[in-house]
Image 1: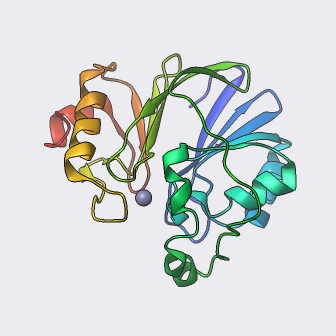
Image 2: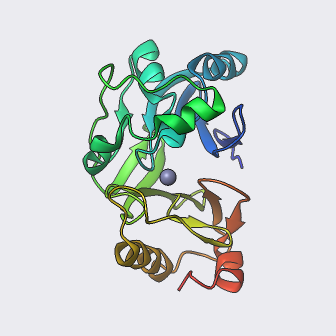
Length: 213
Ligand SMILES: [Zn+2]
């Protein structure tokens, strides 16, 4: 997914589990949901000659932020996440143990809160931040109207929806968030990157995901 200047790459960092997204514009980069290890991300950035400018998390689960504090500290960049998910930082360390990923340093770097609505990612790419609670209290989706890309995190998957039985999860709130996404009436050819599993499009979701309504 690329135009002349801006590039979106979906990266399944080792040990493959979560879909992370590396966005670059010129020599600047932002990472969404930095799963994996800080050193592996450092190699990715170095290989592409990119300067990390910001980190964004769809939510505060460990498989979406495992490298966030370390990257924020190493590169002195902000890590943006909804404040309502701050209390989740450090929760679920057993998942990281299972994958052999270092546990999250809960006192190193704290996320910066981010408002919903229109932002300019890397001063170059229009980005709408959408509140999508339910999987977690502070769930966010990120929509790029010009590139026609939507990042859903674990709110929605290609053929289902995220779990609502973790701390702070709520089934009714999750389904309200999914219907708000549906009711945005995004173009059919909007490319959708989910927190896990295969990507989709709005058209595929409309036709194949019975919960996207
Ligand atoms: Zn999650």
